[in-house]
Image 1 (cartoon, one colour):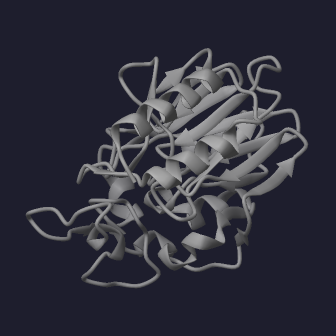
Image 2 (cartoon, helix red, strand yellow; image 1 turned 30 degrees about the vertical axis):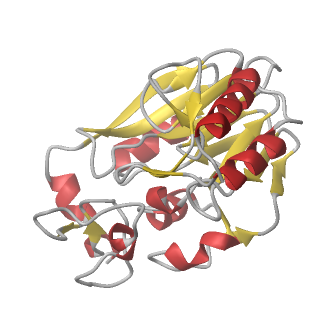
Length: 268
């Protein structure tokens, strides 16, 4: 049964079979906890104190997570686009109540994920809603539980619908991706970034990092290319990886300004 498949308690990745190591945690962008690798599964999480959490994060953007938070602690976003609801990024916890609540909001037509730290129980989500998962092929090696539902795309952009475009920036991971929603914010546009473009406490700027816990800055050439890739897209709001990590206005200007500031401080 899939409820018993192992989930890393540090990063939240679900694997297809029991193992003692977690490649995601052993990578220099994450870390192995001092107490060592520890494991759980969905059955154990459901039997504990966890419940689903659903809250509005913006106009037609619904945050989805758990309380208490688990592993890295990110929240996913349900984008209620005119072309159909898309789940952006993914969280570890899923139960019948959470599925029913999302179905009441119109369900989902697909899942798109920014980078491997948020792959987690994506196959459970895919099977619950019978939808595909869109991942960039550059991060194929990090999939902990291969499944036919995973659809790999290549290149710099992939259009999910007329108003939804995946953009591979290559920040944080080679397949690091953001989602541009052209019709979001009443047509002013929204950018959903996970932590590929990180919403930071100072909402006048964003951050770019190769590793957050280990404080390794992203390569200047990658940041420079990411800013160029985003320049043609118009967006007002930016939605990051965490609860309330939202920049409500001037998003396009903030990204470009932040890239310039970053490049002033970090040399090639």
